Image (tube, rainbow, N blue to C red; front, side):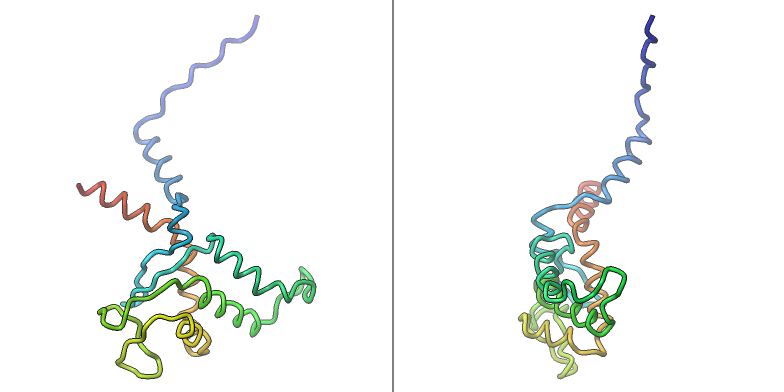
Length: 162
């Protein structure tokens, strides 16, 4: 005689909400990954693409391709070279845009303090390669890790307030 399968209790509303919250943190919007999301970095509006974007991943592969085989798996890329690669990765793929000079959250010009700087990839590269502003590069990398969730969180917050 075979054992009768045990009946599965229906999950509580609280457990369903916990599961939804758990999986919700990993939700992503493919168009957001590629197009980027507006984030604020210390008062400046920057449009950041997700690290999981195909464009961003392709740029990373392109940057490191010339180094393939130059370093064994157990040998780290030298810090100065790693830093240069991060700067190029952020400037050429992760930063999609920033607010224009006439916007109150426009990018500050590091060479002309008090003035705003229009977005161009050349300006992004110039800023990211300034050694004194490497923390800006790191902050963009951090934001890029989280970008896929921004629109999902914003939509949920809006839905909860209507």
